[in-house]
Image (cartoon, rainbow, N blue to C red; front, side, top):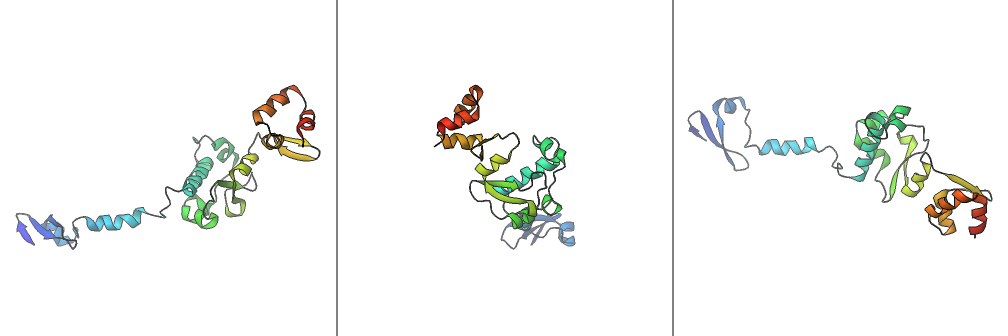
Length: 181
């Protein structure tokens, strides 16, 4: 330590040198060259280390649908009274503990579509299955089998837009009888 006017040149534990004022030295306000602040900031800023993960984006989006009136999906969630449980709402780590990692190609599903986002009502399901549970999905029935339009098109070996065009011209039973294998 060397005095240079009203400041002292001090050497930090990390080896770096820094000028520190006498009052900051006396009170202990200056404890390092700045490396201690950086060292302590990392654990404070890192709560779970999963900020850039798919699970975090899913959690954050679900929370927005329920809580943020300006969210595009709020009218179908928060405005209808669908909420995220207190356990998950302010703590992503609890959500991750309960749900676990999201398998590739899966998304979150509420088993009761009118229920809240909570452990007893949520699970990971394939996106292809989850998309069938949206409002406005069209189901068609033939020979006692009920499928969505896209599944019938796949079964018939045609595109779903082709099936829609056929449906504009004739009843589904007629189309199904023609394509059914």
